[in-house]
Image (tube, rainbow, N blue to C red; front, side, top):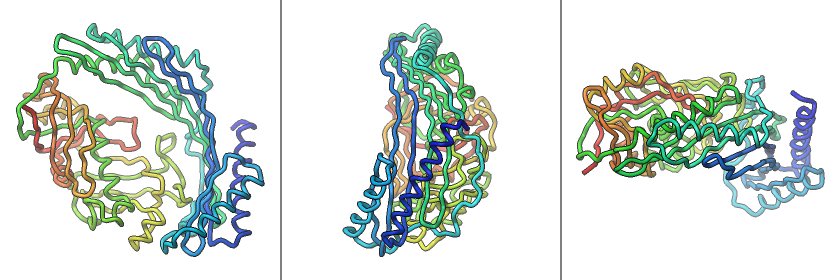
Amino acid sequence: MSERLAQQRAELEQAVGRALEEAAKLGLDGAEVAVQKQQGLSVSTRLGEVETVEFNKDGALGISVYRDGCKGNASTSDLSADAIRAAVQAAATIASQTSADQYNGLAEAAQMATEIGDLDLYHPYDIDPQQAVALAARAEQAAMAADKRIVNSDGATLNSHESLKVYGNSHGFIGSGLSSRHSLSCVAIGQDEQGMERDYDYTVARRFEDMLTPEQVGHQAGLETAARLGARKIDTCNVPVLFSAAQSVGLISHLIGAISGASLYRNASFLTDSLEQQLFPEWFAIEENPHIKGALASAYFDGEGVATQRRQIIEAGVLKTYLLTAYSARRLKMTNTGHAGGIYNWQVNRNGGDLKAMLKQLDRGLYVTDLMGHGVNGVTGDYSRGAAGFWVENGEIQFPVHEITIAGNLKTMYRNMVAMGSDVDPRHSLAAGPILLESMKVAGN
């Protein structure tokens, strides 16, 4: 860590500590303070021409205070002593005007993280706009060269950002962390006698050097687009459906919302009262591991200072835990699981082979590579979304399909999972491969 960065970290921790001291002077029941400083570069090109160049450098200190079940929030981008004092006073004034909620308050002191090590999340990269533009343009060039039917580009975007976060509360906890995130994406447009199609590819990593090259991203974007040309409609049918790795992530993500505390205490989840219930086949399992070095979703503590821990989310198909914050845990009379802010590196059990093997197992049916719309009802689990992909016969892709809808219910879909492939999409905090479902309703002609 550079001397400049170490000084900035110390200054932010000092600002958080000062805010907590000001809150203590007011005799509040508790307070929590978070501040994040982020900076970076975003560049977009189209057909090699620069569209946008953005330098980002922002951050603010936010404080929440609690008194007699009432909560008040305030923020300031000015970290001077006077500004922090004013923000704390503003939060206290707001709290005095709000209704009491017995479930408000800090997470339990005993749950605070005590060991905060280096998770290898911080790898800044010194890149100037000219270099970024050149990399984005190379991705576009590779996309255009991938297939003669690629006739246009919808642009390429490169992002490189780093951030410093500090969180503290009245339990005496102050924790901080540095992280970096780099990404490159490219969108290609193809055309044949039937019309135009578009698709994309992207890469993301903590280390700039761990991203795919611009040529790899652009080439794949071009291939994905070209593969969609000549798409046909199909007749309505009930057939096995194979979700690509990228779409499988979304399918499993509906589980996250359904077992999150906010959905549960509002009775707005199709998985209410499902703890210790069989939701998936016995071969299916999800393990959460927050402490994988260099991973995209690693952390030693959550957004409330609670220590994260390795745990089984699904074991032998059975739901083993909900995802709870301090507030939702109190509402549900359960134990906080340290999920204020999201999930941490879900590793999903895989019992299938690579994509080629999964297509063979599908035999005859639909391979879904793109989903559209938001037709998922989190209360009932009803699922209906526009889709595109490929028709498969005898385990081989025959032709692209579009303008179809796939429908079912998530409970049934989860129970009817036949296999998960080994080709994992590494760009997500949820590591899943292609998922094969026994059958779904496919609405076409």
